[in-house]
Length: 171
Image (cartoon, rainbow, N blue to C red; front, side, top):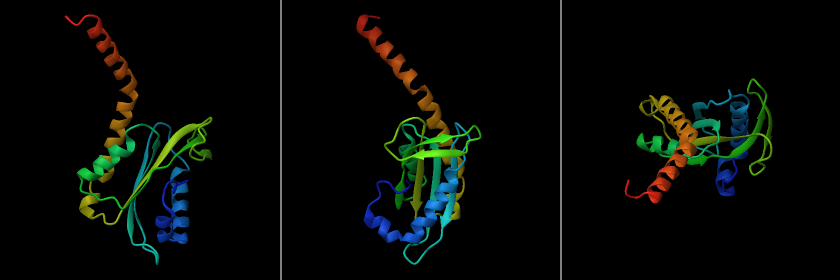
């Protein structure tokens, strides 16, 4: 699930143990989340024989437009270069407490709630670069949630304004 769309060459370079450990960490992150809220963590991924040390910026969120681009924009504005980007979407069923009950693989969009796991791996994340990063990303995620909630209503109003202008251009 976490590695969908990643080439076999990249996965092979990471090594089986690294992939298994990362999958376990990912499963722990997505195991529970409050409805309508994101989860965010920034952590160092230890170096292995097959891989270099990396930092992971990991986000679990309701899937919505603009998320990946907005997160990448925040990182770019901070001068943080991306080494690897994962962003699978999947459908979940959760209980009332937000505990994961079921996950459908990408492309299985039946009943359930669509979520996204964004993992940005970077080679170096200094103390200075980490300072305020979680707060900055949380603000971006909040802004995207507000924009998406208002997006369709805004398009409707724009359509109404265009229609009014076309009907009465002299106004």
